[in-house]
Length: 372
Ligand code: SF4
Ligand code: SF4
Image (cartoon, rainbow, N blue to C red):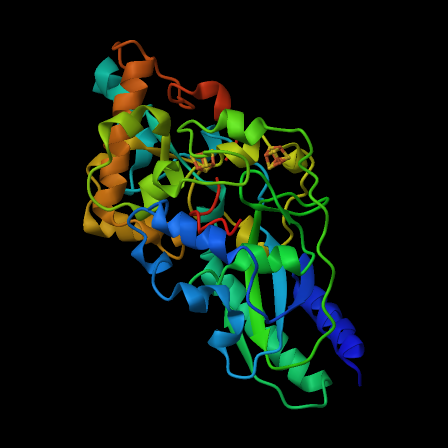
């Protein structure tokens, strides 16, 4: 069989396993290496030191697997429907917000319990590392069953040193938008990316054109001005980085922009016109929301070890430690208080931060470097 025939088999199998998109690229080093090095040199990766380790390997997928010839890139839609604040109040302690806000607790207690922090969409379902690894393992098995030549394959899901957005774009899955995320026609950007680096010779796909056009919505909406320009991301200013990746205290000047985001941020995806009609996922493990959209701050500020384990069980939200959740909750509390003019909230269960108009739905995955 020819590489083109193998590619057709791989794509059919990937779709049958449930991936929403699949594309193929060669295993040569990615372009724009100079940009990536400049990005690192400028310290835009902040305290994510792992991004600066082995940059040559990160840029060259063939270094992950001896003899690699192709990279199979997949995308999985994680957009779950119906995430209303009222229906999703967290029950971190077992009693939850409702128990903490009994009418006879007094007005102050009710107001405190009514304050919520928002969680980015990607973190609310089953941990995507697990979901994608399972699906990629199934793809390898299925390929071995149908492709009559021996091959090696290494699955990658976010944690491997690889510039996955660049590879996905080169494989024709989508284009890298001005918000540095991969945007997929008719699907948008609420997707998880995964890769199979393989020794199999496959026919590569052609990249897609950029459909951002003259739009600048994401650049204008970012609450912390994390975009120095289109297609450029300063991760040290991104709420996803600050709330999930950054250990220690957050610089006071960055706090107001965090608004009511207690874990991650979805703003630059919420405003993107390519997400307006994005379909909901059909994957059952991503439809089931383990974490609510809004978590009561009161529960988070006093988060004990057992409650933390319950809150983050089985989700990617365990990426942030217990003390980071507490830190984030304190910041959101201060932001809500400031937005309330010092009157400290007025019982709005969907309370938002100072940038309320920007916080309409939900979050971008932690920003891996934009290889642009
Ligand atoms: S995730 Fe939020 S903070 Fe980060 S770049 Fe997008 S809008 Fe800005
Ligand atoms: S909001 Fe506009 S500029 Fe930003 S990624 Fe979406 S289409 Fe591109």
